[in-house]
Image 1: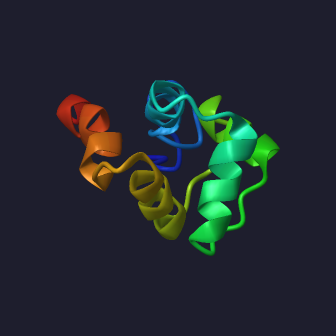
Image 2: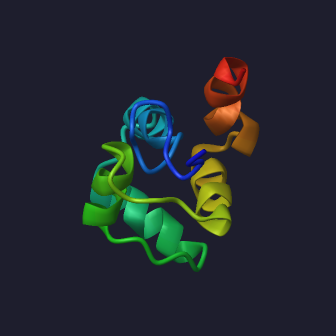
Image 3: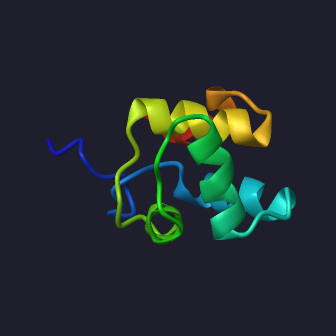
Length: 86
């Protein structure tokens, strides 16, 4: 069984949540990239877009950085995926 992709064939399971929280916080791709950079996480604005549309993976420290930028928990980003696991 191939566990590298979500059910929809995306390379991550948090892209839609990252987009949701980015928009909820009125952050452009550049502003979010800047906030991540202040945490020592270098993710270009194009890479954030690629994460949101599911064509780029997200590593653990990046996931933590996104959560920190949005003032939420990592669980807030992953809970939908866990709920749908069988």
